[in-house]
Amino acid sequence: MPKTRPGRAKKRTLTYAALGLAPVLLAGGLTAGGGQWIEDAGISLRADTPITLQGHGNGHGRGMGQWGAFGYAKQGWNAEKILSHYYGNTTAGKVGNTDVTVSLSEKKSVSVRADAGAKVGGQTVAPGQAVSLSGGNATITQGCGGAVVKTVPAQWVDPINPGPSRPANELLTFCDGGDAYRGSIGTGPDGVLNKVGVDDYVKGVIPKESLPAWADAGGFEALKAQAVAARSYVLAGLAAGRKMDNTQQSQMYHGASGEDPRTNRAADATAGQVRMRNGKPALTEFSASTGGYTAGGDFPAVVDAGDSISPTHSWTATVSPSSIASAFGVGTLKSFEVIEANGLGEGSGRVGKVRVVGTGRTVEATGDEVRQKLQLKSDWFSVQGQKTMPKIVRPPVGPAAPGGGGLLDLLDLSPLTDLLSGQLPDLSAFGLSDMTAVTGQLTPLIQQMIATGTGVLAGKRVALERSDNSNGSTGTVSRDRSDNANGSMGTVSRDRSDNANGSMGTVSEPRSDNSQGSTGTVAKPELVTDGKGIHGLVQVLQNGVIYYSPLTGAHALFGQALTDFLNAGGLKVLGFPTQDALR
Image (tube, rainbow, N blue to C red; front, side):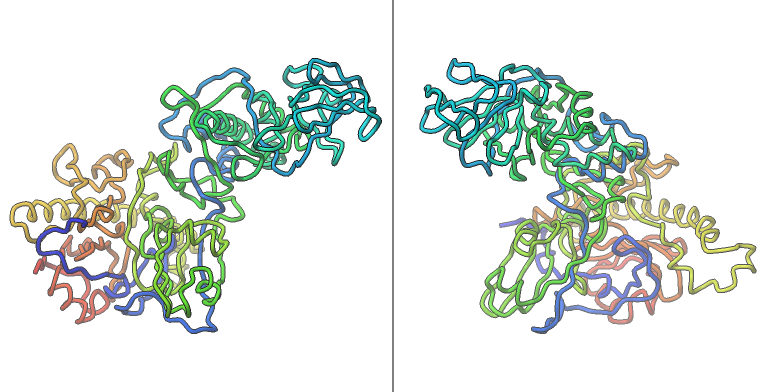
């Protein structure tokens, strides 16, 4: 059973709407106006009302994002910088051109030829002749389907010259379809196989996993990064005993027929290069688009600012209640809500768990299971209209992008125009020509408030925990914390260095103990405005809330005091609290 602190066994789910907040920062953007006050979970459903999912990214999101790599390359990053960013805890390494064997899943039999001839079973196959493999024997014929010349025991057909980067006339080409492959072609328990040097193999992967045209648009370094990732992945997979094929189950691969001169240059430019971990190639997974934040897993999750150019950076999907009910076998659908997420990126981040309630039964499924069953682009999505916040369970997080980091990773202030457009109708009175000028002048002020407020929130969290440790009654925060060098502000840990001003200690998102059943924080600090138009921050905990504004400082409300505050109208009516109330 998960551990729960004394006196905190009974929990309630707190939502920003239930707290009476007018959220200024939700789903990555600023909005003006208040939210509906609600206490219930999920969304109301009717049989004919579709459910809208708002998501980000395309694919599993682990490791390198291919569109993000392209975006970073266009910003001037080289392949090494791209790879170091996505594959934390790895180093650059070098390997020889060792052979790799992959299954050609769509091939059912072997009948191949080469203009320059080939070798099979110790025999030389003359130019114009073909070879078919079956039952452990190789049959040499006069051309494809021609008269039999000779039959010899063999399971592999080899090129006339086994070296790397051989010319097209030496490549083995299938009689049926004309697909050409470097290296040898054979048969085995896994079907039709291609044994080829790893550097030549990579040439057949890059154009199927990335877009060769990126080389013409400032993205050649992204193609080089893809080459290194593909090389590392296949070597690590085979070393771990995985069976590698030519599909998305491993890596897309179509031999020499799928090659492109631009991606071949990327393969040649990185020949032998891999990412190493613990002295051996790392299993460097990658996917099309991370949506702006990688998923974690074998490598720490990191911000992926390069992904902003991805065509699937953001997406919307509409799903009928009946299709959800059918996919999960719950009868008639009653509710569908995200109950656990990783808290990284816009909204609540990638979905860890979803609860599907129907008339027949209730099912809990992982975000990836939902992605597959509903054929979504990724497991990073939110349910439009959901009224509860999911529990946040964060994966290990790496450093911010080189050159990035700081408070803007914590709170997105870019859409200040949306907040201000209805409040300043006559900009000329201020000597400002447009909303861009307003944003430019106000953003530093808001940032300063956030910097101060985040530090004060951290200090309040530290004080609450110390009180909890002394009295055993009012603790509310995660124990994953440490005080800064001055011992004054504490830290809200996100494994990042101090902000640019160096004055607030480590300023970033708190880590949650929710996965251990404790009463850690359930949401990162949010920029809000009360009913009087005063801006501030709130830190929502599982059993309470810390409120901060520059005028009132930071104050925590718990238990009946919080209930009374909410029943009286919360921030919208009462404004920011002016004292603590912990009972």
